[in-house]
Image (tube, rainbow, N blue to C red):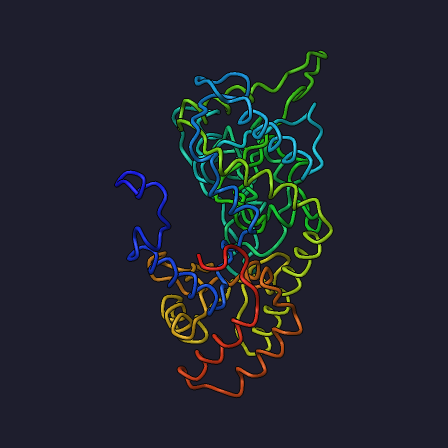
Length: 406
C-alpha cells in the first residue's frame, strides 16, 4: 500500500492510535457514567451513519436549485427532504411556514434571526421572580413598553415550567415586535405534543437538533410566510423575513452547509413522528418529575417547586454547598451534570445551583421504576469509591446507542 493510499484507507486505530485511544476512553466514560446534563443526549446509529457518510465531502453553498457549485442534484434532494420532514414533525403547513436547515448549530441559527431583523442591536433581559423562580410577565410587559424591542425572545436553557407563549404574543403585538421562540431544549417535547407549542403564536422558531430531539449537532430556523397582519384600512402586511433569514445564514454568517448534518436532521425529524419517540418524550418528563419529587423529599430546594419538562434546577444554598462543588463531587462518582445560577445569585462564576436533566438517561432505557430502585441502593451506601463503582456497574447495564467501539 502506497503512503497516500495508507493515509486514505487505514482505520483510525492503525493510523492514529493516540486519538483512537482517547475516543475509546470517552466512549467508556459515557457507557460507565450517568449523563444528567440537560442539554446532552445520545443520538441514534442512523444519525451517526449520516454524519460519517460521503455527504461530508460535498460543497453546496446556496439553497436547493440555487447552488454555487455543480454536482448537487442529490444534495438538493436530501436538503428538501430534511425541510419537508422538519415541517411535518411539527405539523406545519408549508404554505404558512418555511424552514432553513443549514445553520451549523443553535447559536448561529439565533444570530441569523437577529441579523435578519437588524444589523446593529441592543438587548434587554427579562427576569424571573426571585421568590417563585417564575418569569415575571408583568415586568416583561412594562419593560417592553419602555424599550420598544423589534424582537421579543421566548427561550430558555434552564427554566422548568411551560412558557406562556400567548402572553409573549400579546406583549409582542403591543409593541409591533416579532415573537421569536427558541425551543432548543424542548423541541423533542414539542414534536411529541406533550408540552405547549410555540408555533401557534411565534413568528420565528429556532432549535438545535441534538438535545431532546436526539439528532445531530445542528440548528434549524422556522419562519412564517404569507400575511402578517391586516391594517384597519384593510391593507395586508406580508411577512418579509424568509429571504432575510436565508441570506443571514448564507452568505451572511456561514459558508457551505454541512450536508452530513442535514441528512442527520432528516433522520431525526422522521424519528420524531414515530410512536416510540412520543413514548420516549413522555418518559423523559416522567423521570424528571420523579427526580424532582425525590430531591424534594430529601429536603432539597427545587427552583419553581418542580418541573413540567426535562430538567430540574436545584438550589443548593440551604445545603451549604456551591454548584461547582456539587458538580465536582457528582463527577467523582461518575454522574455528569452542570453548575448553574439560581434566582438571586450574585455571580454567574460561582453559582449556587446545579441543573439536572433526564433525556440522556431515558435514551438508555432508564425508566422511572429502575431509577427508584437505584436511588434506594444509593441511600444505603455513602462511601464515594464504593458509590462510584456501584453507579458504573449500574450504568453499564443499559445500552448506549451508536457504534460499538467509538
